[in-house]
Length: 231
Image 1 (tube, rainbow, N blue to C red):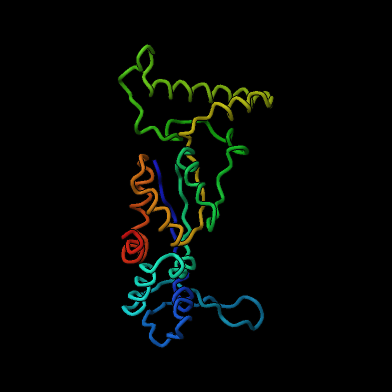
Image 2 (image 1 turned 135 degrees about the horizontal axis):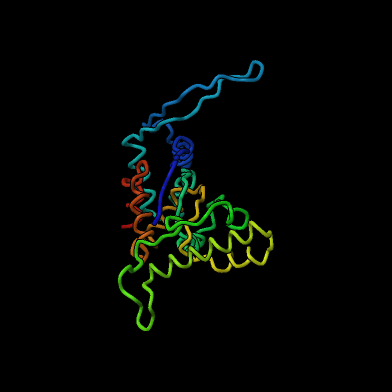
């Protein structure tokens, strides 16, 4: 299971302006940027212009695609187009996502601090592939029954910790928590990061990576730009 919420993309204007610096070709830029005005709140400050939309022109898009095809040293403008999104996914997926540390930043919900904040339910875990009606050989429980029993035990240990505040019960929760436990992180990254991830993970075993790659191509101009780096 993986879920994407509150995506934001920004940085198009300065990325395009910088992309054209090497040849001083700013006059050939044909993109349009829409702005909203936020009134100043202190003294006589100038109003703050907030970029809310971008329409990339033919000339700029053509140059972007040529630079991407030319290789990583030429597509530096991708590092200046930023994406922020809330991702909820199992810890086993985040263990692989954490490979991409350079150029990414994440703030996560804290397992250490909030593990006892609520009772565990089945929906707190990624369980879509668990077998429900077939016992494992030599065992008497199906994988889904094992998960349900684990959740019951976790909730019992949680109750003991809340009643006693004895840290030994907290340790049981931490060390028994499955890798399928879902966590939310607010992540900031760039189009360059996304291109690297898609190129390296699109054939991965995990469904979450396939869903991640599909989500990437729903972002503005990702279809037109990032696929150039996959050819």
